[in-house]
Length: 279
Image 1 (tube, one colour):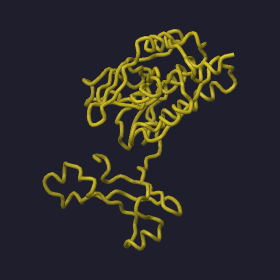
Image 2 (cartoon, rainbow, N blue to C red; image 1 turned 135 degrees about the horizontal axis):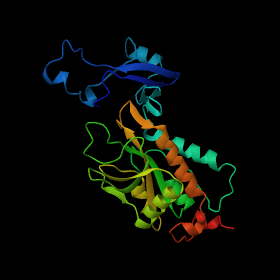
Image 3 (cartoon, rainbow, N blue to C red; image 1 turned 45 degrees about the vertical axis):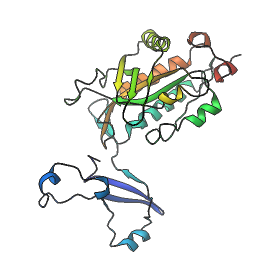
Image 4 (cartoon, rainbow, N blue to C red; image 1 turned 180 degrees about the vertical axis):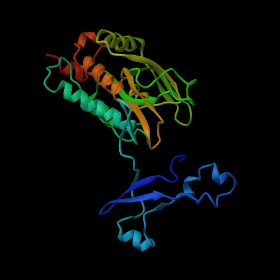
C-alpha cells in the first residue's frame, strides 16, 4: 500500500494484458497528511486510459481482473538483482537450479520439488501436496528480510551476499499465530553439510516472519521441517533486491542434501516417500 501510488501495473484483461498506472493526487493540490501518508486501499484507482466504464469493459477489464506491479528485472552492481516478486521467484529459481543439478544424478532418496501457491494468501497451499506425497522431511525455501540497510540494522544479522540463511526460529504473532522452531538435529545437519561443502550460511532468528513450514510441521503425523532463506532487501515492495551468489549457495546446499544417503538424515522414516525410494 505504501509503495502503490504512482506505480505502473499490468492488468490481465480478457483479451490480453493492459498497462495502467495507480493514480495519485497531484502534489500541488495535496494538503496536510496527503503529502506524506499513503491513501487507504479503497481510495486507490488504476488509470488505463479508458473514457468510461463501457470503454474499460471493451478493453477486457471487469470486476476481479488480476493486477500485478510492473517492474522488469535489473542488475545492480556485479551480482545483485532488483525486481518485483523476488519473493518468491527466488525460491522457484532455486528449485529449477536443483532440478538441473540432479537431472542426471542417481539418488538414494526420493526428492520432490514443489512450487506451491497461496503462501501469501492463507499459508496453506502446500497442504494438498503433503497429503499426497507424505514426506519424511520437508525443507522450505523462501526469502527473508536482509538487515543490511540503514533502517533495519538492529533487527537481525542477516545480510545480502553472506550466504543462504538457515532458520533457527521464525514466528508470526500478528493475526496468524504460527512459526517454526527448527529441530536441533536438522539444524546441525544443515550446518554440517554446508561446512563440508564450503557453502557460506548464516543463522536466522526472525520474529514477524512466517512461511508454510509453520503448518507443514503439524501435518499428518508431524513432519520434521527446516527452512532455508535467501536474504532480500525491500521485501514486499515493487523493487526487491537479492544476491545471485546467495541464490547459488542455496542451490548448492539443497543439491548436497539431495545427494546424501537415507542414513545421513536424522529422522526415522515410516511410510513416506524417502523409505519407498530405497533399493
